[in-house]
View: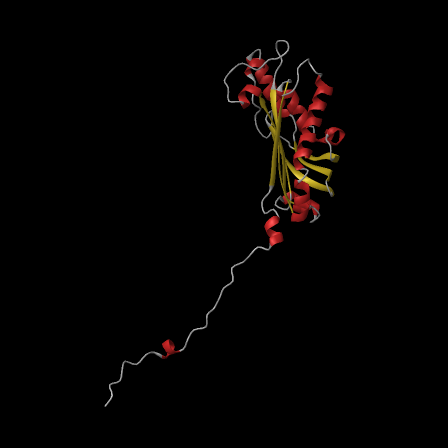
Length: 244
């Protein structure tokens, strides 16, 4: 009588189907399209006091009169109190009384917190709402796009940007370089040098449009800071010194 081997479970006799889970793949076109924001930084060192340049930057209503690609600009809401104490420049203060007066002026001053702009940039001509964040004496930042609640409420889905951040910053030239020295001077004594930075970060809903804009973005940012420098010269004069 033949000896029977151990019985094998039926499951071992039935071959399981060879299932293939296809991993998501990017098409050739998708691999060429941007998946992250486009970021740009340009800067200039100008022979003007930081406070004067900051006042120029925070005047959002005037943007359309001198910034290229900005066809309309209007502040639609103002703060009731200062968003923060300004950084005092001790080299320009003659006394503690002067410092207190400057701080009180900043605290009583209203700052823009919301604005509407119309831009013509590459293939886009678009009006949109921005939330504005001011750090007195330091920076002005405009934020827009689908991620901003103010944009969702007021642009009603017409904003082509997923995210758009425009930030102007000013700093004493030596501070920006990390040097603990006296304010930089040039032609003539007392010329205050200030570093101005323009940072742009944008991501559009349509990646093809973002590709088109990326080809001219560097040139556009340079034109913007060129226009800012020209505006400063018109308002404050050349002073015999050149930008860097």
